[in-house]
Figure 1 (tube, one colour):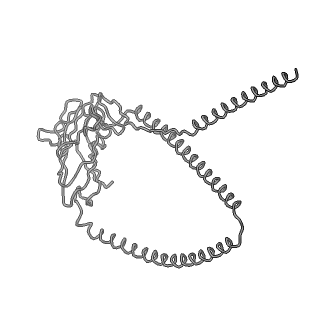
Figure 2 (cartoon, one colour; figure 1 turned 135 degrees about the vertical axis):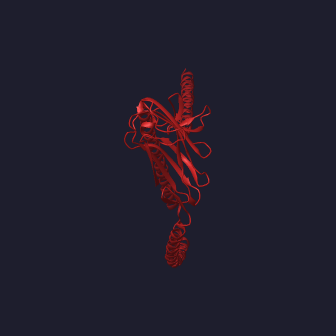
Figure 3 (tube, one colour; figure 1 turned 180 degrees about the vertical axis):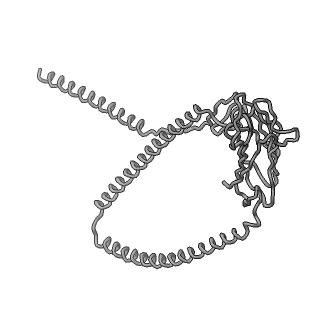
Length: 328
């Protein structure tokens, strides 16, 4: 009877032990899978899109350039973007700035975590090396010889540093002398590389801003049309746009052969009774010499249907145009 009970208890103990081992193995397997999942990294892909808007029935980008159906610039511009589009651009810029700052801070945090992990691993390695050392006299003698060798290399390094310091000082003097010579050569050659335009001189490669001001109209203008003719061998148009009152209901195209064409019509009228900016053009100086872009008028009509230019493009009835050139 006792033998049967002892066998029964033994069998029960073995079953419990086997069940405990199975549960432990499943728990360990779950932990390892969690660690693998946690070790995976997620890459973030950023995409940028060009913001487009619809103004007066045409599609434009954030700078006012008119785009075709493929999203390419046509060379035409709208005078100015509406206030609601400008407010939308500002809100988008602020939102993108906040997101970029958040990404940079998270990236820096990740870098700090990596650096701290490297430091901790380095500390553990050094502690292991110390614990594994035998402390024999032979290792101490090797360490002293290494110290002597490092002392010799440090003296060599200091001497080489002194030499490099002398070389740096001489290099600074030579660079200063070369910069002075370059500046003097630029000054001496400035007159030979100058382009005379609008009673002013500009160097080759300069960006010249030309502003045409319209004034002295006896009434508000109903419409206008004209073009600016320039010599493409001396100047290259970088941008052009209508200014102020002329930008309302006006169009301008500068992607033409040595011409900038513009026109506009507004039933409320364009107020140029006093001097105001009409159109602004940015030129790039291509070569030295002398040139004179000219604005030509085809139509200028007042609200009373009074003409302010004749059939030959000459301004009449008191209206005038002044031109101002400046370097950007």
